[in-house]
Length: 180
Image 1 (cartoon, one colour):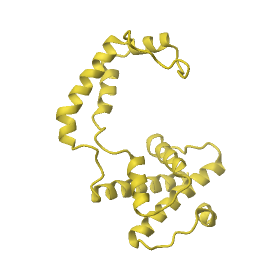
Image 2 (image 1 turned 45 degrees about the horizontal axis):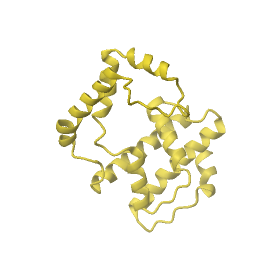
Image 3 (image 1 turned 90 degrees about the vertical axis):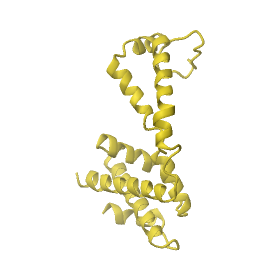
Image 4 (image 1 turned 30 degrees about the vertical axis):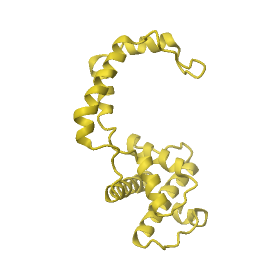
């Protein structure tokens, strides 16, 4: 339980640091929220509704070689969507004006000259902890490593925000410090 709480705190800290850094450097959004909300989103919602109503169209040519579901099952799934489910899909469109966590984190690490070889793992771990309340990994040793990676990245960012010339120890040298 301690690792989950500690890791969730580190993930939340990292999320907030990336967001505040993006706001401070004027990189938090892709497009102004009011433009997105009043001009773009209504058109996207209308288009989504049209797609759901007419699915499948004769022009649909899915990459069935890589599809994980059959065309018949896809058609059935779309046809079963009720109004609440369609509205839930449409509501996802409303937040697309903001940059993603990955984009904000990547930019902050680049600007702060922090090299992180396990950025995908940090992102997966953060997503699982924040959205599902669990580690991405099932194995306890891997969970400890996820914890250490989140703590290391948070530590590195804080050091570089304090002073841009801060020396950041290699992760492998500190891994035991974070997991013991």
